[in-house]
Length: 295
Image (cartoon, rainbow, N blue to C red; front, side, top):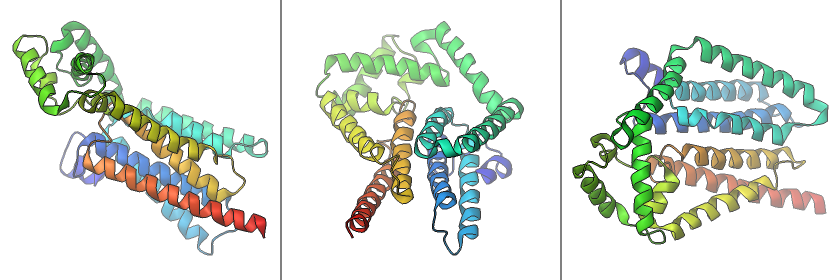
């Protein structure tokens, strides 16, 4: 889909059947989850009868996910990659395989460096950051660039939060506030016309109040703690589920800084269904491990 959008249709960024940011973030998340499965297949002490086939399928799937993220040009998703690397190291790094991990990191770092240096798309997206920041410094709340418009609407959202920090002001009232600010010349037409604040946690706080934000954070961090408690477990299957859950939650927290990932239907459903499946698999595997241990 990304290839077709980029090279056959001639789009600037791949966006599938949704927005480019959602498309890129979901592609990256699926690539990471497939990477978790790939590591489990490699490290599994009891090889599957069709192990080689699964290695190929998972590797190709992961590559496709990474290419989808790349072609989407989603910088907010790329920021999460160092976190994913740290979580993989937390799950798999041991004294016995330290050298192998260093080699893999060196290869990945070299590949990323070559890609960043050679790829026109990456160069353009990175250079755009500096252009947007300069534009925002020059125009402030009237900024029209991608990052500048975000900063401007974030300022407006903070002002709205000050008015009702506990219960929020709701979508209708926020749109009315933006309209009034625009008519008064306090915010530009571009940020005032944005469909949302492009920040999950700021959006939840501003629309639904601090109590809703606290509930969201407690849900995410309690689930993350549940997965974290098994990230170094001796059972490879349990460890893989824990790593997948942490990557899912950690990725969404970082994605949420520049997009409302938990408010849009497609990204919200993907998160909830993936989280439910991973937690159910964790629970099932824990019971199986306990039964074997007690036998």
